[in-house]
Each structure stands twice: as structure tokens, then as C-alpha cells.
Length: 311
Image (cartoon, rainbow, N blue to C red; front, side, top):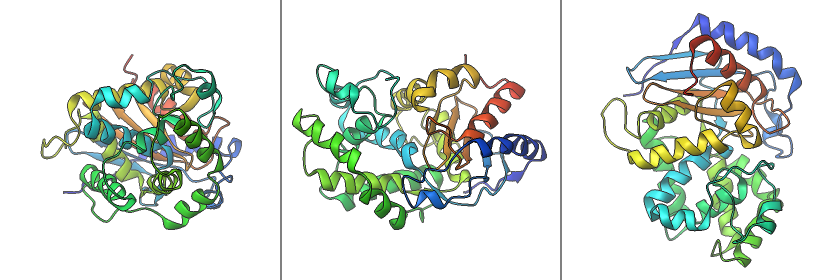
């Protein structure tokens, strides 16, 4: 059953206050298809473990997961391969560098990505997904999304995927560097193809909040109690969201907001308050770190008003 969200006047007021910050941000026009987004847009959905859902803004408008997909592929890769295999190839530490930086790969020994939330680490994780073809791997990831949202029609935007594939030269560089150091294997172009399609999976705020709720609820479907993600893997994912989820602004976000979250350059933010609620936000105007500028302000206001920090 898919929960229908109720409009919340209180959330509406917070959204309108946060929306004033959109003028200070900029959409991700370095990916041409994302550059067409409305920079003033801002919406939020909040799903609770008791079945309630509150919303404000245009929560049915779709956007692509982008880096939020890194959370899902990490969970799936650990489910496929186990913790030891994954973390032999990808580290667990924050970087302090931009999400697409190659610098630490060149200086680390062994030369593996510091964590799964930066591009290098996410590419290595996507390379671990089980399946014989791109279609099979992507199909498994989409089925995972369908499981968490309760919606089987969710797919990816071929327009956004193609736009990202054509402009993914820095990610190609990261892949070839990691292939040289035996972190990844197989064909680089096939990996880039899968990765860009993964990032282009389309959801709305309601879907994102529902995924956040499953992660918050120790990996279980809140309505049926069925385990979608093993509890230990859900714990690992939430921990990475706290330490690395907001790029190199994760420390500041932990202090000002204090809940596990992950952002994407489409302006999406997923957040998971353990055992209580999941949040989905979309605000395409980004700050200089690549995070939704109004989305972060909205979460700061909510955390201050409702005492959301887990710390």
C-alpha cells in the first residue's frame, strides 16, 4: 500500500522561509539535462513509522537520484558480496575533498577510494553489483528501489543518463586510475553506462521519503515488517550518511542538523531519523559544495524546531 501524504501548513511555512535561499544557489548546469531545472523549486515529504505522511510543495514532481543512488548501491553491493569484500576495495573515512576529486587516489596506499559516497568510491561499489549484463545489474537495482517505495513503475531518465554519459570524462579518469590499481575490473565504458543510468533513476519526494523510512526503520518495510535491507547493513549505510553523505560539508551538517542524510546534484536530499521517520527533499539550486542550498536550510529549521538531532 502506498501512503498518501497530507499537506502540512506548518511545513509549508518552513518551505517558504527556506525558499528565499534559492537565489544564492545555482543548478547543476555542468550536466546539461540538469541545467533545465527550476532553481526556485523546493518540496518535502516526511514519512513516519506509524504510517503518517506530511508534505509541502510539489512532491509529485520527479527528479533524478544522482548521488543519492550511492546509498542504495552500497547496501546492495554489501548484500551481494559481504562487508569484507566491499571494504577491501573502498575505505570508510571522510575525505574533506570535493566529491569528484582524484587527489586522494594518487596519494593513498593502497590506492583505493576513501569512502563509497565520493564518485571514485561509488564507481567502485557499482562495479561490484552482481549480474552478467548492464541490464541485469540495473534491473536488480530498480527492483530494490521498487521494494523500498512500493512502486514498480519507477525507472531511469534516458535523457539525463545520456547527458551524463557524454560529459562523464572525469569519472572515466577515476575508473581508469582504479583499474590500473586493480580496484575495479571489466570494461570502463560499460561501468560508466551503468553508473549514469543508476544516477538517472527518477523519483519524487514521496518516493525518497519512503526509501529514507526503510533505512531509518533498520531496513524493514514499515507496513509489513519485511526485511528489505539487513539490519547491520542498514546501520552501515546510516553511518556513512552521517560521516560522508553531504560531501565535504558533512561535519557542518552533522552539527547543524544531526541526522543521517545524503544529497545529490539534482537537488535531492534523503534523510533517515533512526526508528522514526524518513525525509525526501528536492531543491535544485545548489551551494558551492553541491548540496541543495534551500534543502539544507529547511532541514536546519526542522532540526531546530523539532529537536531532530541524533547527537
